[in-house]
Length: 100
Image (tube, rainbow, N blue to C red; front, side):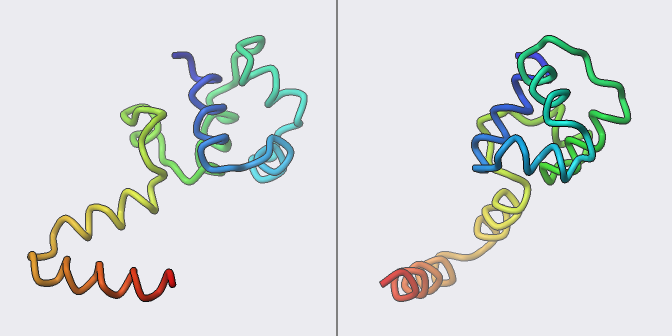
């Protein structure tokens, strides 16, 4: 998978429009479209801005599979994994009540 495909997959998994990402990353929507479709290779600066706009740093972006959760969700999951069984059960009950 190339960089553009990965950007597109992450953007779609986060339910972010191309227009929103382009504005947030300070690139034109046309350039972002060409990058996502593999028609243009972005500069390093452009890659950094797009990745930051998606909520990733360079290490996480290039190390992560595009099917992984966004960094904020990953952080929550990592925190949950540190809980003991009683804490996990309490959290589950809390979430179930919250989602009613």
